[in-house]
Length: 434
Ligand code: CAO
Image (cartoon, rainbow, N blue to C red; front, side, top):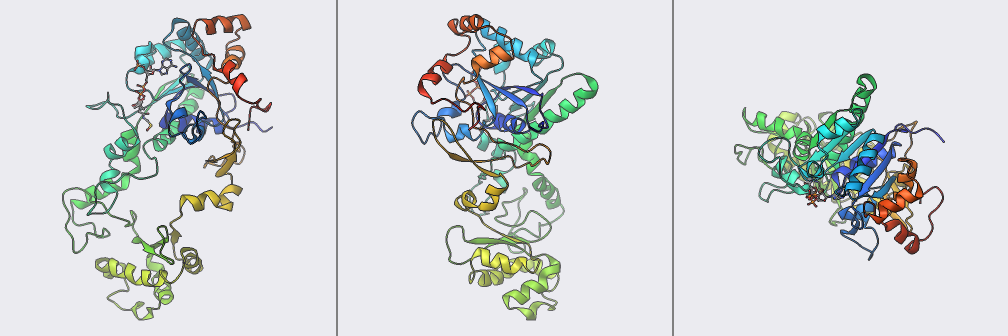
C-alpha cells in the first residue's frame, strides 16, 4: 500500500460538532492517525442530532468523522487526565473546538500542554479571536453573521441571509487544517510545536474578502456592477447584491425551461464574448452598437442585458443552454440541485461523492476528499462507533495491559461502549473499514 502524505502523524482529536471535525477528517484522509476522544456514553453531540434512523449515528456525525478511531475518555476524572496526558505525549497534534475556557477548566491550558509535549502542535477553533466577544460560544450561522457574510448575502429588499455552504464551520476547519500542516512543516526545522488558532469570524471574513474590497471602493463612488446602480441608492455599507457577480465581469442567474425551482443558469458577460452572446440570442444589431458594445456602455443597463439573455434561456433547459454557450467559450454554469449532485456520475467517478457502508445504518452517501493528491489518494472509511477503539488505542498507543484497561474502565475513566458495541453491532471487517 502507498504511504499516505501524513502517515506517521498522530492526532489527538478533541473536536466536536462541525468546525473541528471537518479539519481532522481532512487530515485523516491524508493519512494521519486521528484519535477522537469522546465523553463516555455521550460522545460527540452530533451522533444523536438530526437523526434519520433511531439509535443509529446520525448522518451529521458520520459525514464529518470518516477515517478516525474513537476512544471514550473522561478527561475530568483523575485517571482519565492521566491517560489524556499520556496521549498528549504520544501525539503530534492536538485539535479542539470547545467553548472558550473549557480545556483550561479541565487543567490543560496551552502552557501545560506545551510543557507535557513541547513538539506537539496545539490547534483550536473558537468563535471569535481576542477581543470583546472572545468568551462567546458560536455556531455556524452566528459566525456567518459576525464575519460579514449575512449582511452581504441576499437581495436588497430582503433580510440578511445565511448561505447553505458552511463557511463558518467547514470553512474554518479548512483554514485550521492548513495552519496545522504549516506548523508541522515548521516543526521539521525548529523541533518545536506551536499554537494554531483560528476564529470562525476571521475565517468567514477571509472568505468575504471581496466585500471588504467593495466597502473601500464604496467610499470613492457607487459600485457600478451592483444591481443598485444606476437607479438605486447606496448607503454607508456594502449592500446585498442579489446574484450579481463578485468579480470584475457582470453575472446573474437567469431562468431556464421548464421553469422549476432550480431551473436557472448563471451567466457571465465577458467582454470578449459579447458578439457571441448577441449572435446566440438573436440580437446581432447590438454587437457594434456604441450604446451596447462596450462594458462601460452596458453597465447602466445590465438588467436589460440579463432580461434579453433570459428571454433566450427560457426557451432551453439549463443543460441545453450550457452546451450551446460552452461551445462558444461563453462562461456559464447551471444551478445544480442537491438531488442532481447526489446522482451525478462524474462526481462518483472522481470520489467526490462516495457511497460508504456502515454496520448499523447501512450504505449512505458522503462527500469525499475534494483535495486530490496524486501520490496520496484518499480512501473513505466509515466513521467509528462510540468508543469502538478504546481498548485498541490504550493497548497499541499507550501499551496498557488488559488488567490496566479493565482498571481504567472500572474506575469510569474510559467508557464501556465497546462491550455494548460487541453485543449490539455486527462484526466489522478486519480492515476496520466499510
Ligand atoms: N470528558 C469530560 N468532559 C468533557 C469531555 C470529555 N471527554 N469532552 C468535553 N467535555 C466537557 C467540556 O469540558 C465542557 O465542560 P465545562 O463546560 O464544564 O468546562 C463540556 O463538555 C461542554 O463543552 P462545550 O462547552 O464546548 O460544549 P457546548 O455544547 O456547551 O457548546 C459549542 C458547543 C460548539 C457552542 C462550543 O463548543 C463552542 O463555542 N466552540 C467553539 C466554536 C466552534 O467550534 N463552533 C462550531 C460549532 S458547529 O456549528
